[in-house]
Amino acid sequence: MKNFFLILTVSMFMISCTQVSENHIEKTENHFGTIEVNDAKSLAMDAFNDAYVANDMSGQEELFAENAVANVNGQETTPAAMMEGFLQGHNFYSDVQNSERATGTFVLDSGEIYTNTWFDWTGTSNATGKTVSSPVQASFKWENDKVVEVSFLYNSHDYIMNMGAE
Image (cartoon, rainbow, N blue to C red; front, top):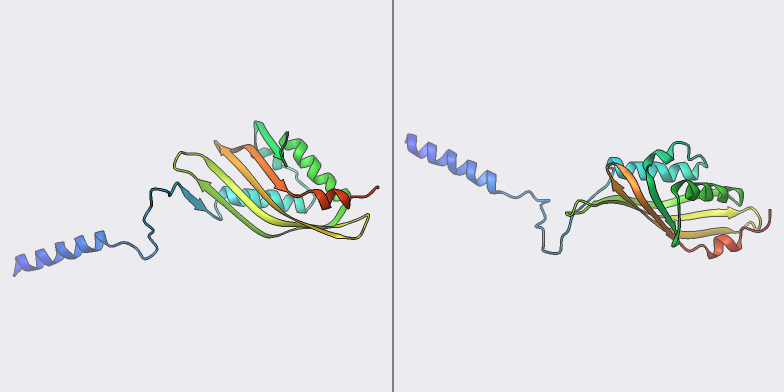
């Protein structure tokens, strides 16, 4: 009887150790990394976007490595110049919003880390009164908890056409 309870206990333990949780997903050969949301890097990028909307990017330069590169619609610049250019847009647009934002950090099996954010940018032109909208995609590449490369992509046609003369 003692052996029976021992075998039963060991069997129950082995079964419980081999059970897979209901949220477990088997990694396929094409699966390459994970995506995190509400992690420190995603929250830092949300704060970056919030600072832009608030027209005050004070302290945001701390996110970037010393030699970081910024690309805005394929034009290479520095993160400082990128932020300055973004803030200058507030001279031409009011009620600037970033809506329907989604942000996630991609941790690749290779060790590379990117935080991507997508949102709809809208603003009302001070010159024309027209509300302009454009989907935006941004990618921030991290190394040692600093952004080393950032890319923003959006359709700037209507944005530029409605800036008008100040």
